Length: 497
Image (cartoon, rainbow, N blue to C red; front, side, top):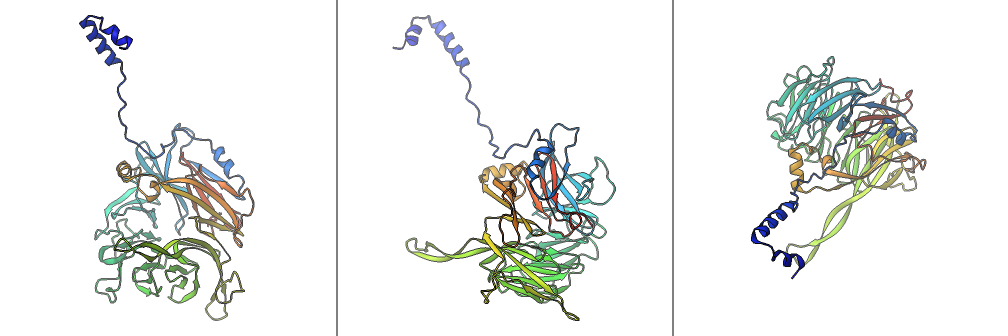
């Protein structure tokens, strides 16, 4: 018998009862299970701006910064999204924050870093903002939209919301929409069409300038299928890939048909409009550059299947490809095996094309061969393994490349809980970043130009490049409320219009 037990047997029954009750009250209660929040907490304090600027100082670029929090505030404004807008109206930085349980959208001038306006928004959405001449629209996958005044004088503390709800016909997007200065272009599951919604006078898409392609009863609608990738648009043209293996180009103002060249196969690349050419890939292992008339400027046979967004600048073309291979899998009987074609990441390759001007005739487009010894094909200037890197900017003989590694880390129950709290809206919100680097490579050979031009960007949660000749720059933002711009020679670029 233990000493404590033996001592208790010698006590009167009343004292034993009192001892047991007192002891039970002294035992700490078992800790209650708490709801796990796997996302990192929002910052409650902030670094000085010099801490971030020092990390960018090695780059051969100038630096500007904007502080959303300001000097009077102790807690940071938490940044959720960073977007850069370039159009014929103005170039601006759009920032969406989370501040005391509310979300705001800020418009900051892309050159002098002055504030155009700040407004409360209804909620974050999973598509990027859609700028038009007078408005900025936010739209989600359910077809709900919010339209905000873009141009009027600042109204401090007031909402700039001018319209919200659903567009006429209850459009449900089948892919991300896009916009130009006059219209929003929404691929719709409704009748497998694309809608050109006029933003010329009102923010609700109503007006004589709103159109649908293809129109009901129009010839060829039986072949027209759902649009599953974001269209591209400029002032004159909307280009989109249809699941019938065609590229379509229609008039941006009227929806009138222009051309529908065949890609000969399915496409995994959303079209890109640059220098009056439309760039798009094909599962046939080809990358096309089409003139807006529907004529081919050039066709490139690639090392694999093109996928993802094609980056075009200064007539350099960056395309990533998938490698095809035979994968051994179990047959239907569960015993024998069979081979099926599968894909894995292949290469990111850099190509270049030239434009040869012909007197009294149309120009000739010609690809530059990276290896003239192989006369049967056009080789890339250089390639490297595709690890999900992203071209941010081409400036002079340098290409600025972001290398980012992410991972899934949430289960479905955690995702559902965080969606209900508004913490997860976009696909990127579900991923955890393991590494983020910026490297400055020689655009002609793909080699790192200098050892110190390999920067760790883990402190910059948002990084976006500019593809505009007038604004060769990289925009960055930190979660604790700073926006940065690193840019080149202002005489050539980044100086504005």
